[in-house]
Length: 439
Image (cartoon, rainbow, N blue to C red):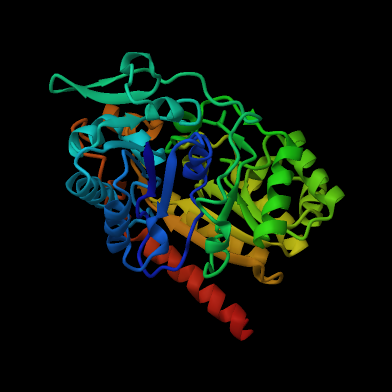
């Protein structure tokens, strides 16, 4: 049997930012050695469609797996990557009509039922984590009713099974560095680290807009620090990867696990750097100092709201002072800091707009002398089915229950729809004045 693994395009061509297909690479390593295997990350090629066509014609695979990582690019952008999945599936079916076409990945999982209807070329869909299930989908004959988390077609209908047990973090397969070489991702990125590293899966927070608890579960599953650093050490030694991004929803929760990772990195004295998203209320001077010693290159905050109202609405369980204290701490150390905020939240008034502006200016002032604020990124909220905020908007009548959320839908009503641009101007001016030394 021949298997082709495909990471479909989920980035703007020409952007130059590449991300290693971590999930698909782990699935690849579960394929039995007796099977012929081919792999393609379409995001690596200027013309990925020609490359996919050639590979399909040359290999005529029995099974084709399409990994769909991102549904759209966010950043208030109304582009959608659904066309990538549709085109890839149609091309596969046209050129290899007898192949079994599988689809999965985070973006697929969020809209699994809908995408099975939208993309009729998909034979089997996989919702959620695939490490336990994927090898079963390669069998010559499938007992569909007994495979957890899959969707399939039967008598003109899409059937589905509930998801099964999640993968233990000490049982996750190794990445397949032969099929997806990390060397292909070590150059070209200017903003994000290309190589992800998993410290945990799952999130016990319940932020209003977020679906991490759906994708990874509401309980944090922790990976042993030695296993994490083993992978980083191997990638540095054998493939020249020295910059990583922790894919954890929040890297510094729980704090003892995070500090154990830092201690492991310090003990081994690896020549690596890394980034990750930090929770402001569990960041301490001691843990930040330890993280910097362990190779922390940049810290990402996702405070998500600049007002007390917004923090409460999004269930962030933090205050504005928590955000400001975290800024003060990173400014004192000079570590490169990125902040992400959501604007124009439900129920906000002109008074909230002024409050948000003041909080933003306070953050800019805190970082001004240290000049360590790399960027402040603003977005309206992308609405996803099942997210707490989406449910609240439907309940209040501010969003139709028939709203099609497969394609980008943002909460950004008047009269504050231009707030993002107003705040970006504030940051742009502050950045230019700082660079020019203008007081």
